[in-house]
Image 1 (tube, helix red, strand yellow):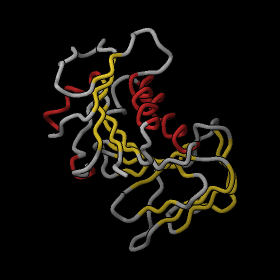
Image 2 (cartoon, one colour; image 1 turned 180 degrees about the vertical axis):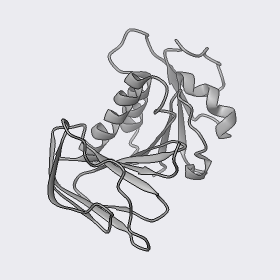
Image 3 (tube, helix red, strand yellow; image 1 turned 30 degrees about the horizontal axis):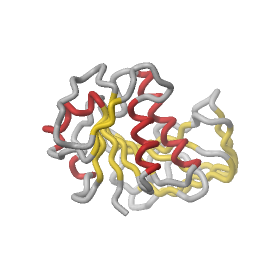
Image 4 (cartoon, helix red, strand yellow; image 1 turned 60 degrees about the horizontal axis):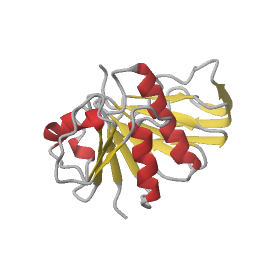
Length: 206
């Protein structure tokens, strides 16, 4: 099935290489200002239009109330799930307001719980959840970090990296998995035996 791309209002950066021709594009409210820079038209528009005027395009549009529990982005993800999408890419959801960034990172946890592959990308990084399956990082990424934003992760193994781990534990109180590096000519491997971690693969420094 087609992948669903959710576009938020934060600057998406240069992420054109991540988009596929057959992606189903959902633009959320302020994300509509990125139509030109992304060079893609929406398949669905979602929002309460508190940060961007409803353009009233000839495209399916879901107008949301401003008083609601879900952010526009969370609603868009839930709507895509309702329509049966199995894979997700979120862009324009990091940077800008820190509260929205943190909330959007939690969307990765929600999708991981449902067993749906998902990734957040921006100009600098690719972010995904590592839980039941190994993750791999090749040498095209100068740095990678493992961060815990959910409970305790145990039995963590990191191989082929400058700072290897074996049977390690990372909790939310002490984030010591920042800025690791892949050993030259190798592919790093990360596994998590219990719990889950955010893997942030850094493509370039700011």
